[in-house]
Length: 260
View (cartoon, rainbow, N blue to C red):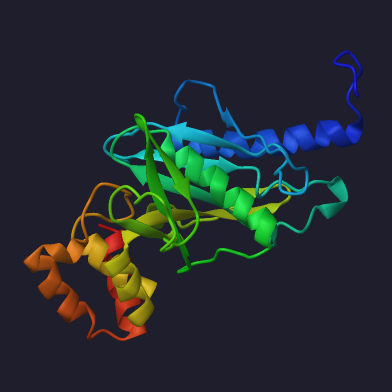
């Protein structure tokens, strides 16, 4: 084991500076974290699924530019070795960090980010724009425990609320890539959705569903206690109109909504 007094090698210095470069970019963009100058470190029991330097950052609302709490992963875009550095116009490592937006501070988004990072390492699958993954929440005393899986008939307890999945889309107010010395990366925001909304996205597209969420004022914000947006007749009728859009038309309308 390396002694704390043993000087870092050049590779170790490079890795730490590269990691700090990403942290600096996020703080420069979104402001000071909560608590100030802190990160929430993640730890894994198995080295095969761990993300070196993997952690979560929490940014409080920054009115008027951002009225929601923002939770971000950090570590997926960090190359492990200096020789992995690519050209500036190529994505850095995974290419995406993941984020969650909420109206109030909570611990569950950090747990979801940890689950996402673990899932990516375990499954070797990618999560890209428009993808959807199953997600359940269980109430544990005063907190919530998320699980990235489907509800099963054999489950002993019913999950909390109606959220059954998460849909991913670029952070629409921040579509510009974050440029670093090892390449660029972007942010994919995960938004919780109900079983009904999940089916709507499957039958049409994630773009159509997100357009409805934007028009209903939910946008990319996650609220694990809400009902399906179409429970409101106004938005149920709006969905009937959105269903008529082609994929291209839905994307154009969604881009219009994201700039408002």
